[in-house]
Image 1: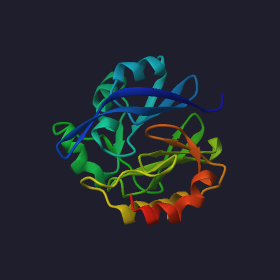
Image 2 (image 1 turned 45 degrees about the horizontal axis):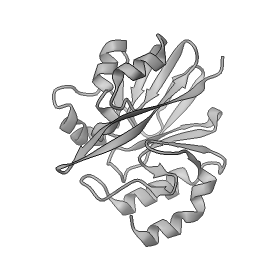
Image 3 (image 1 turned 90 degrees about the horizontal axis):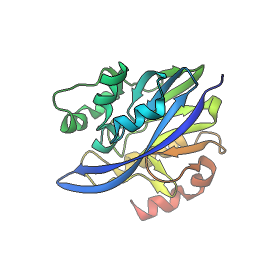
Length: 209
């Protein structure tokens, strides 16, 4: 059976630099009836477990280490035995949320995470966070962008550990080179496509998010 993509929305808070905001997060599950990978274990491990429905969880992949994307990761890992994978450049952010529990493995640019015969290619896209990554699944015609690229522009870069010129370079050089029909599945909000976002790069630069 070919891999499919399932979508779960969980709610909680995002906290950084002394501020706290209510947020809804997209949790993506990629797999088949037997096994799956979770992209961003946000807020509610029990809801994610229910969505998995007893399937073998191969990995919990973190697109970055802001608390709202990783707060449920240790509980989900403990319940399933799946490793938590994070780019090492985001360890300082991870430790703000989980000071006593390290990730189980590292993500690196060019690495492949495989599930149900489908490749998820790790693309390092710093800017929103130093260790931010996207996961490109060419067989599924999609890229999971976390908070790097949204419908309407780049992720926020106004807080600690972020940098606007870097996120623009990441999007231009690593994401907008993908096929225009590629579906962009984001960390928050609606999906979009590479083709829908590519024409607006110069506008984003002028606005200087």
